[in-house]
Amino acid sequence: MWIYEKKLQYPVRVSTCNPTLAKYLIEQYGGADGELAAALRYLNQRYTIPDKVIGLLTDIGTEEFAHLEMIATMVYKLTKDATPEQMKAAGLGDHYANHDGALFYQNAAGVPWTASYIAAKGDPIADLYEDIAAEEKARATYQWLINLSDDPDINDSLRFLREREIIHAQRFREAVEILKEERDRQTIF
Amino acid sequence: MNTHQKTYHPYASPFDPCKPLTEKTYSTPPHLYMGFQPPNLPQFTPAEALRAGTLWKDFYDPYFNSFERAKGGPQT
Ligand SMILES: [Fe+2]
Image (cartoon, rainbow over all chains, first blue to last red):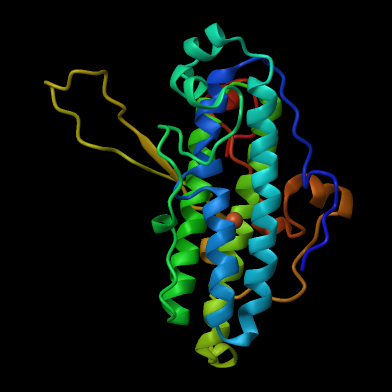
């Protein structure tokens, strides 16, 4: 079960009216390496991973929903007052045709989210390596989003989210070390 | 200390249609070099940590785009 705290993990402020940026940010909402995929991937893998690292998957999977909520807030704020003309000019005319201003789980190119973005092999090492790769890909996506954005407040929040991906990748790497069970014999470089 | 960014120089043909980018960069954040986190690493204060996204100074690697760097932001 979960307990919900009615605030964002990190403040989301938007300095400029820029619906085009919302179109790009959707990549982290419903894209292959986005926050929804991350949350569902980890929370599903928990059941078939050695118990030493179940808690880690629960913690990180839960945090990914907090990130999803931050991305949703950015997209919402960037589009909530946009007219159909502004949506069209931002490349969101086809989104508007289907959804009006509603958010949807799709990537920046409008491809709907699919469960084939996530894997569950059942082999603990294979699954954790997938998770490490997913974190590095999410980190890279945040870099490209920061490169595309000239909104200083959005970039501040995106930098926070990218830092969290670094920490998640680190913890998944440590989980692999725990499962290798030779940690004490290992030299730390 | 490790650098958080590396560069390489791709080949540019005299017939390339666009002005070549002679230097490309990519991120190599600090966790790539850490292995299992050693004990007693230096910490941010709680207020700093909430802003940074990590409690641990050694994992902090803020990313800025070229416009932010040109405006005098950190050169990471
Ligand atoms: Fe993550």
